[in-house]
Length: 500
Ligand code: BES
Ligand code: MN
Ligand code: ZN
Image (cartoon, rainbow, N blue to C red; front, side, top):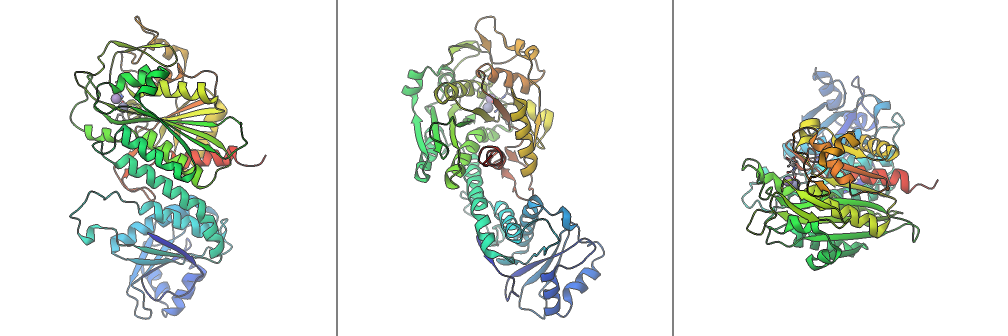
């Protein structure tokens, strides 16, 4: 979608959106439009008994005779002091969905908040545009027979404000964020016949163009490094594994990086512990953790974040075959710890074990945060409203919780404890990859990961319930959500880039 920023003026074509406060009071630009239409806006508000100017309410005036626009939409803004960035993003997203539903191809938002709301005019316009852009995402590259009415119609959006220059400036980082979110959504949506470890690694490698230093570790290199846990999962597939290391150097030279680690299982059949057929297609997005890390690193590079960061993604395909790992196999991880693989479907923790160890031993990071679609159990516990958060560090956990609340990607902290850890002691090896009973499945997964983390502050985000959405939300159309990109970018900007 083409987005432009401009001053307020009466539009002469397309759809125009204005705002009304709770109680039906028109904003300044709505009043001007009302005058230009001989009072049509105020009449429509008065005639709509269910419109109170609250958020999520809107009324549409189709083809007003006095003005050459196709429609006027009056959007409820709620109470001025409750207006914030999130509300504006959601409004931009909801309006985009509405205008696409109405078949509009061109629209302008003329939503001025005046001095009433605690958001600057330029920022307000930028957040409206950001929400609109996020909602406009589609993954339709494989749809060859779509009719025009099935395609999104809205092609160009002008967002008016009192300070278009500031809006443009403010949108630079937001636009980069949207581009990163779109990259993640594209990667997560792509099916496993085209997206497998080598091709996903190539896509990460392409980020070198933005200034990231990218290394792709191939199978021989993984063997040299002793990553037996990664290799064990990968051995059943004809697709060889890859580990990709992406470095962004925007902070003080030599200062320890922030480490982001992603589970990149490009398809998870379960392996020999094979999954049931129903819903198995979902397992194309079992690389969502890696997709988020790749999008996040793209964003750090694009907005020249003033931090050092390293992103590491462990890429495998988990398949059953004559060469596949068997339940009961014992593998040697890079850490030296041996792992009894009692269930080949608990594969994410295996690949992360080596990736976490590698990150910590090579980079001595300031902290490590991993993202993984790790357990079905986290969906049972938290549904799609929260991702599971586990951490060995309260400050890190609190900061992540706050960042999640700020961007609307919510986390819920679950416990780690020695009493759970005992459940993964193995009789035959140092550790086993499942506990053997059905209790606390997500915690058990996190405890397993913690065995591969030394003293460094670490957090694990189990995103199995939030990486993919079955229904539209204001800024997230159904499908791949890219949950984590905005959260971690916010976390970094808030705590590691501000001059103290
Ligand atoms: N990728 C799955 C977890 C998952 C399930 C993600 C549903 C998204 C939606 C993971 O590899 C897995 O299979 N976990 C097992 C662990 C079990 C064998 C201990 C699970 O959750 O059943
Ligand atoms: Mn699995
Ligand atoms: Zn998996």
